[in-house]
Length: 143
Image 1 (cartoon, rainbow, N blue to C red):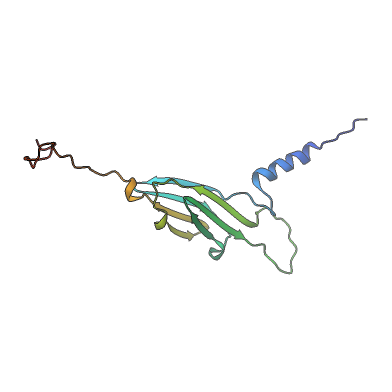
Image 2 (cartoon, rainbow, N blue to C red; image 1 turned 45 degrees about the vertical axis):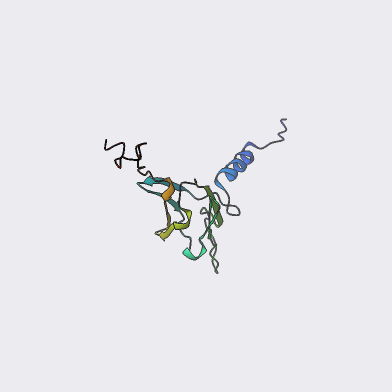
């Protein structure tokens, strides 16, 4: 007779719960991010989340996104429950080259879209070069 001290299926369930979350502790929200010229765009998938439950907070250069998908209550019997419910949270460390005071946020069709402009100090700019002689008013580039 073989006596097992571990159950491989239980271990697999525990691993998938840690990776994908559970209804008591949902996994993080899926995200896409890209750059469009002088702005960064970040989109989070939050289907079934009420816009009122979304909370955005910026502290220093850390952006925190929280949202909640509340469980449905009623006089009915649940037959399947695969969609995670509860509070979702995600933190992003944003670079100093972004203007965090001008973040725009919109929520439509279950997608939260953030647009973060590049800070003016981080944009490329031209620097005027002057010549060393005081009597010439021309720049070194014009000479």
